[in-house]
Image 1 (spheres, helix red, strand yellow):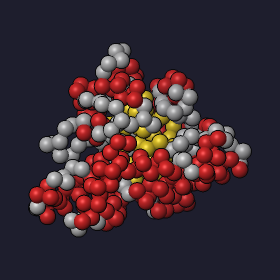
Image 2 (cartoon, rainbow, N blue to C red; image 1 turned 90 degrees about the horizontal axis):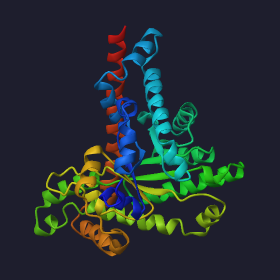
Image 3 (tube, rainbow, N blue to C red; image 1 turned 135 degrees about the vertical axis):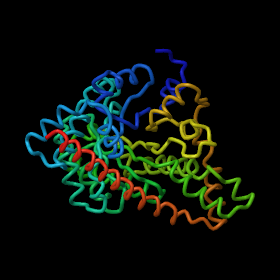
Image 4 (tube, rainbow, N blue to C red; image 1 turned 60 degrees about the vertical axis):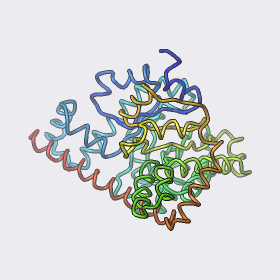
Amino acid sequence: MTDTTPTSTLSQLGVSIWLDDLSRERITTGGLKKLIDERNVVGVTTNPTIFAAALAKGEAYDAQVATLAAKGTSVTDAVFAITTDDVRAASDVFAPVYEASDGMDGRVSIEVEPGLAHDTAGTIAEAKRLWETVGRPNAMIKIPGTAEGLEAITEAIGAGISVNVTLIFSLQRHREVIHAYLAGLEKAQAAGIDLSTIRSVASFFVSRVDTEVDKRLDAIGTEEAAALRSKAGIANARLAYRLFEEEFATDRATALLDAGAHVQRPLWASTGVKDPNLPDTLYVTELAVDGTVNTMPEKTLEATFDHAEVHGDAVRPNYDDAQSVLERLEALGISYDEVTALLEKEGVEKFIVSWNELLDTVTAALEAAK
């Protein structure tokens, strides 16, 4: 394909484009392979909402659902079988990308059950079960970056499992996630595991920060508040990248990198704009910087391919401005800690709702197949 499209420009800059969507239809029709060939897509992220949507439409799952129903499979076991089959098949589609990138990309993420977000032991057990069941080296297990998730991240990494840490909203939590990753690498090293086989990303959510902060700015109603609309999410993510650079330059991190480990790349999640007045590629172009992943809904991916204007590194030159944005928000009485804590809580709750919707969808499908 041409190397002058915005998506290829992003790729050349060092941004890995992952699709935030998956369905069996995408896999079996060749649609996923087409995105690799034509849109520079080098990975996939999934969540319960995505699987619920996939199962609710089309006939791609009918045969498997009928087989599971005939066996009397429970709904939770059916969800596990269906989703791990999709992730395994998608991982096979991305195997050439995985090989070509020496394991950096070609990744397909699957999430532990959201209800385990505050259950450390349960998360560890589920992460290991998912990893073993998918059985592909280019899979990634999504673990939420809650306080309880930190130990689970360390244990999973320590067992040689590649992890996508999700639902990160605050800089402090991002720092804790990086430390959990480094602790996991140290455990893996002590166990004799080849550190070069372990990969991780830290999924830092963007647009949801703007949605919550802008609501508070609108309530304040001043010109100063209006001037800060839709700036918090990008500022927060830019400072997360600065934190990433600082943490992986420490002696502790450097020693592990020298032993063959990889950095835990920042991944920009929630990159579809929620405000229709904003440019539809805002969270792509303004967070373009090497060594990152941007996971995009298909609508954002197509907008990026069609008309995104990528002008090189949009992050490092803007650290001071990003810091200023957060300081000005605090001066207006908008508490950064309060906003990010609320977003983490709501993020877990939303995924639990989606998980229950997925269970309901599969329950209905199993009943209809009997």
